[in-house]
Length: 211
Image (cartoon, rainbow, N blue to C red; front, side, top):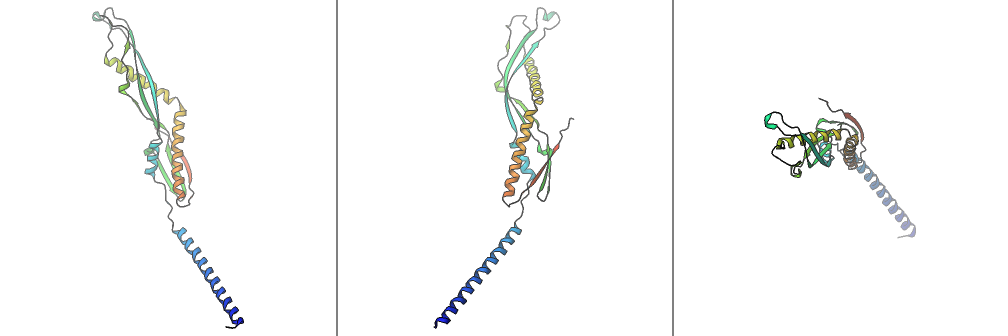
C-alpha cells in the first residue's frame, strides 16, 4: 500500500470511530431522558403518617401523692370519731400526642397539605402495682377507719389533679406536636429522595373539639 493511500485509510478509520462515539453519546442521552420521564413519583401515604404520629407520642412518667381527709361520721355509732388524714403514693404514665385518625392530607403534585389535629392527652394511667400502703393515723376503737373506697376516691381525685396540671403546661403539647411534624417531614423528604422529587409541605391545624 502506498504511503498516501495509507494516510487516507487511517483518516477514514478515525472519522468512522468518531462518528460511532457520537452516535453512542446521543443514544445514551436519549435513553437517560426517557428513563427519568418514566420514573413514577411516590406519594406520601396517610396510613404511614398516622403510624408515624403514634411513634411520635410523648410518654412521661410521674410520681404522685394522693392526700385526703375522711370526716368523722354522724350519729350514735360514730361517737368519739374525729377527722383523719391519710395518703398513698403511686407511679403512673401519661401519653401526649397527635391523634391523626382525625386528620387528613391533600396531595396536589408535589404540594402536600397536612391537616393535623392539636396535640392532646391520649391517656393517663397509674401503675396499680406501685400504689403504696396507706399512711394514716393510729387505729383505735373509734378511729374512723380508712376503707378501700376512701383510698380509691383519693387516687381518682389525685389523677384529676395530674390531668389539670399537665393541661396547664403548653410546653408538653408543643413538644409532642413538633416531634410529630419533624418525623413526618423526614418521612416525606426521604420519600422524595428516591425519585429526586422535592415536596412542599403546608401545615394546617385541626382544632380539637371541646365537646
